[in-house]
Length: 152
Ligand SMILES: [Zn+2]
Image 1 (cartoon, rainbow, N blue to C red):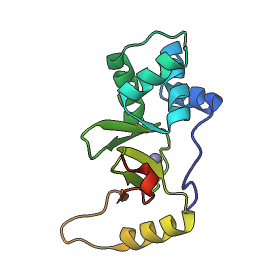
Image 2 (image 1 turned 180 degrees about the horizontal axis):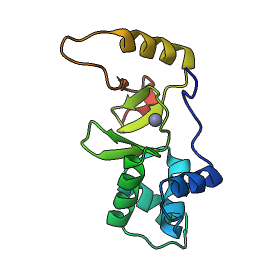
Image 3 (image 1 turned 120 degrees about the vertical axis):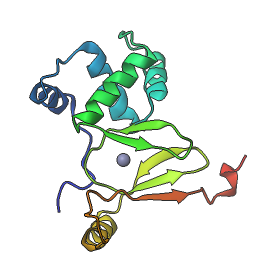
Image 4 (image 1 turned 45 degrees about the horizontal axis):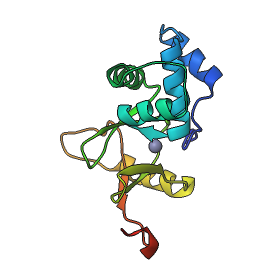
């Protein structure tokens, strides 16, 4: 399957997607997408911090950002991700892909190995569980940095 590890949508693609879902390209939504393009995986707090520190002219509070992110996840433009520290993260990449989750920093990273991902999804997708059909496969590999320098 193609479309694995898609790049995040450009601003133009994002505008087109909003239109397709009958959503207006408001300054707030565009600012949130700009932050998400830079962050990749982020909670509403992280998007707010990014906008504040990047000197964005758009004024938007955490709950509005959360609403925008949730709405974009419901339309499938973004994806929801629940982290191990119980925060709702959003993923700018809505294509199916495997995550590395760093337990020391609670951050997600996309696994940059298409071949491995294809193999995992193909294998798991064929598996049968009595009484259920597979809706989706979401793989998250929990990791910690190996370098001593990264320890506190
Ligand atoms: Zn991701």
